[in-house]
Length: 170
Image 1: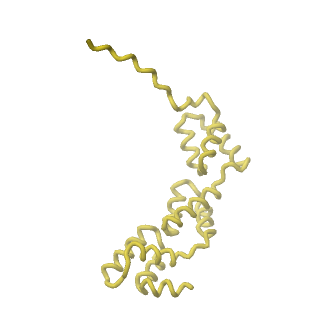
Image 2: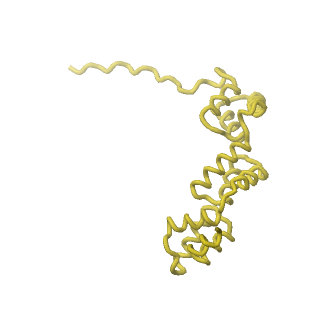
Image 3: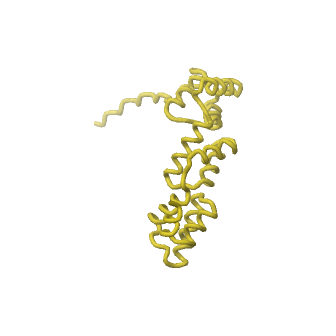
């Protein structure tokens, strides 16, 4: 005889309803985990069903208290992406997609004080090895452009060769 299975316990909704905590509390809970741009926080609050006026007031309060800063977010994201081997164009584009103003994005990239030619040279050395023939130089240039390096940097690295580009920047 087969015994029937006991009924499944009701699943608990892991997300509390928007009315159970304020937009400010929700914003603080999100920022406790990692940095967010104002645009990203606003999107998350909208998805959670908070009133637009409450969400804007909460975002203004978070910024006033210094808990949310687009400049700080831009600096952290730019530093992270540069360490991952992305170029300045890609970093600025990603910051723009996150709702960061153009001047803040540019300031974050410039604040890195990063040697983009050396970064591109190291990336080509790791990924492509030698640039002995035209096909390998073309592949390296395409890779660097996809990763967001400036055209002048790509030209410098692929035309002069890896060794010359690394020596010329010291």
